[in-house]
Image 1 (cartoon, rainbow, N blue to C red):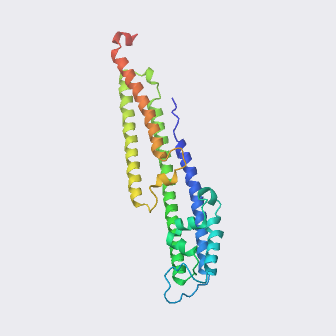
Image 2: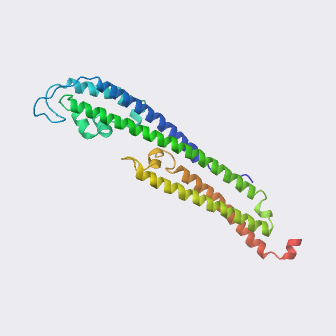
Image 3: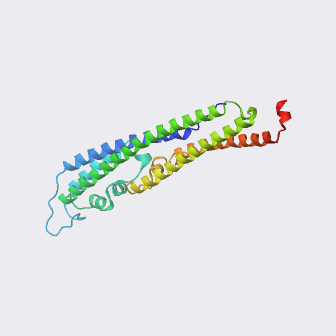
Length: 261
């Protein structure tokens, strides 16, 4: 018979993972470069009574150097305009926090506490990207495993339907229906496992990520490519089951004498 494997969403998901991995690596390297630039900038000694992140006062040369470093590194990744297209204050607020962004874009100076917090927060952003890259590697392995499973199930369907349903005898039809229903149950079990995994992962992911699938596959045709593949596979099985049951119904009404002819 030859059933076509519905693996298109998996191919699209792989492309999305490759794109996200490339962008995250670029951003991680840019953040590392920014941190190195910040560590080399001289600080201004605060006078008595200054806030931790003073917004007014002299010594803004250090802050300008920080802003220049951020623009030259973090905002200079190849995908910046496509993915963000934000002003420096907007992007820094989203990346390092509103308080740090306000201090860096204000009129104060680069005081030691501010510099330390910039380095610490940038390290956190670098670490977070490393964690997401690990999740992407894990997800890619799941895509490979899912594709292998789907191909095996397709081969089983082809084997079951090696003889067209319309030509099967009654007992063969019953056996065919049973084997197809077992595959359908297996498909349902895989879907349940994937949904449970996504729910567990959603609880473990760092804010503000709402879910790995929503984050990785937001620009794909479907946000849940593996669920979509198994749904299409289930449709293939269901159609075959329907055909088998229709043929069984017809065969059960056919007189035995007619069968012998």
